[in-house]
Image (cartoon, rainbow, N blue to C red; front, top):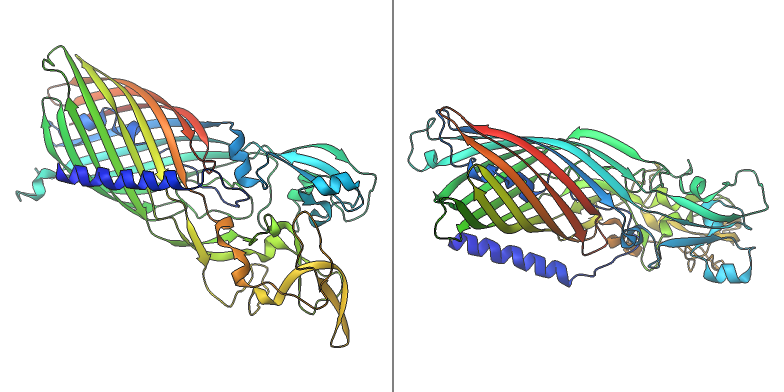
Length: 495
């Protein structure tokens, strides 16, 4: 019981720290979405009666768990990827009206659009996840005759997922009279132009299917009597999927970005009524926390105080006039990503009537956000330009300057995504300290869920079986995650 109280206090402190964080962030280049397999209430439904309380001759138990999860639209989620706290952005060129230039969010020329172009775009990020998890748990009591070890059970979990992401990129109010060669015709084409190697905006849905992980567990029952239950377990997860691909924004990812994880869980159930012979009414509480080991990924950065500066143009020192580099190519760099951990909490009531079990609960899923940093220096850019660092590059200006008797491309260091500033009198470079590390990191998550589940159990002479279903709705408190709904079915047994 002391262990349960300590773990509960730690996880509640995590949730309190998450609550203290900002509720909305903007202009991020990466989002971490809760994998559908990370659903503690779904995994524990009915399974809690069998996993560490088997009566069969082999003391083994399994469950097969198909599930489906789909997001529903929330305006604040779109603001996570956009800038200025807006749900739609205005793109306008330097020769449009003064009113448009004052109101614009993005300068059209940065996106290789015509100088008289104007238009707006918006997004509605959506995701579908379809998958199936197979779980097996084996008691050690008939394998090892050691008093301490034989009370434990070891298990394995193997989820396979199909993930489909769609930004639902939409453009409207397009106006231009120019048909220049080598210019993008519209916003969707500009945000998906071939010159950008990274951070492009895909105009359609993209799906992938992959096994997510192998999760090994070891746990034991501390109490299982008359609907009173208390268990504890520890886990180790080995990812089987690939790392996120930085080519597109909001690319589908299976699992948690190929991070290896170590965790622990506590489940408990307390009987609330005195006579459970006909109807048993219980309160349950489940807690699980997982710590993830850092890994190396490519992430796309902005400059400090310059949102969307990854979509501006840059030039290398001593470059010929007009020689520029898309910011997404320059600012996508190999990074050390620390996700720290996630916590899953589930609590509610269960009612057992003969072979049936009904469950109604409230859940929380929390993630503290990522911390990222550059892997190493000097930097070798993903564009295969070996260089001493970012200090060989600057924000591209509109003209040229004379340096060492040679005309070179000028810089305009005060430029932002909405405006190109006046050219600098001398070449002004950026440096690694100019990078906004938060812009490339997934934001923190605090998701509230409600679930309902029902199932049936059958106790046989040689094998026990169970089957059930459940559904949930999920609402993010912050804008760094999606709002979801979903359902699951399950079939399992102990033998």
